[in-house]
Every structure is written in C-alpha cells, then in structure tokens.
Amino acid sequence: MRAALVLLGAALLAGCGAQEVLIPKSGEPPGTVDFSGYWELRTDANAERRRLNEAIRRTDGIDGGAILQPADVRRDGFLLERRDHGGLVHVFLEHGRRLKITQTDSAIFISFDRAVVEEFRFGENREVSVGPVVADRVSGWEGDTYVVETLDENGMKLTERFELADGGETLRRTITLRSRSDDSVTIVQKFDRVDSSS
View 1 (cartoon, rainbow, N blue to C red):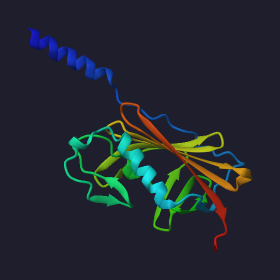
View 2 (cartoon, rainbow, N blue to C red):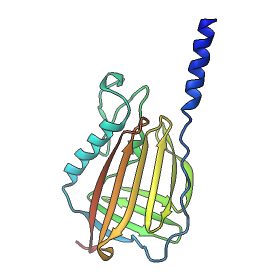
View 3 (tube, rainbow, N blue to C red):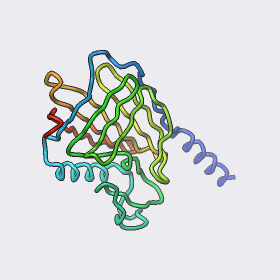
View 4 (cartoon, rainbow, N blue to C red):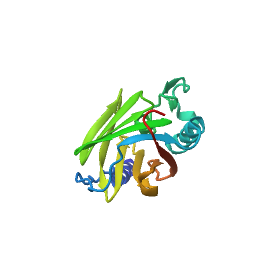
C-alpha cells in the first residue's frame, strides 16, 4: 500500500510540471520597421562566441557528470555535447560578425557571415529541427521588435529579440538562454549598419 501511495505521489508531481507552450506572435509587421541591410558586430566576434558558449554552459540544465561524451562535436564553434538529458536548444543559435538581412512582406532572412541563412516567417508557429534535435518555434512582432522563441523538448528556451536604435543605424540583438529550472543568461549584441561594399 505504501509503495502505491509513493507512486501516486510521484505521478501527481510529474503532472504538475506541465510542458511550456509558446504563445504565437503577431504576423503583422509595423510599417515603420525594416531591418534590411548589412550589419557588422561592434565587439570582437571571438569574444562574443566565448560569451555565448558560457551562457550555454550555465543554462543547459545539466552538470558535467551527465555528459555522455566529451564536447568533440562542434557546430559553428558552439558547444554541442551528446547527452542523455538537458537542453540542446542552443543548436538553433546562429552567430556571425557580419549579417545581411532581407525583410519581405512576410518574413525576415538573416545571413550570418555569408555561411548560414535563417528564415523567420511572420507569425510562424511550427516545429523546427537540426539533425535529431527538435524544438517548437514561434516568431513575430511585439510592437517594433521582432521576437523569435525556440523551446526544446527538455524545457530549455532560446529567445532572440531584434530591434533598431539610433535612427535605424544600430541593430540590437538580445539573446536570452533559459534553463528548464528558469535560470537565464542574457547577452546583448549591437551591430552597426555598414555599406554593402565594405
């Protein structure tokens, strides 16, 4: 009888930790915001990469003892460890020193260092994957800010916010990585608008 009560209690506790559901964003772009153009990171790209890797380590939700193999697999310089649990949403995070952004009536396309292009459809609410890693994604507008939220199956969340400043000459990208236990790290990157020929 006691064992049955323990199992019932464990089941009830597991039911209390419901999976987060991402809230869809607006698919209607404000008429005054256009991210199109060429952008260059103000700070050192390698230093930014180190900051992002440290943020990943602090929020992936596991300690070093839970790693199945060393971090010998890397994707664009980011830590990608094979694990039995913990967050892997960071595989959806792209990084670059130079961005080329194209904005249409229905989407934003971001080219990172001419190597990887990310497409974000206004008002999207879909499943995305990189290899075996699957996550839910929503993206769209919150006022003049474009927001992309990606949530992996283990509860780790990546939020990216893009907004213009300084009369449209500065692009601010705010990256927040949040563990399933709500520990989070936020990094703000600033990009200056540059001429396409530079």
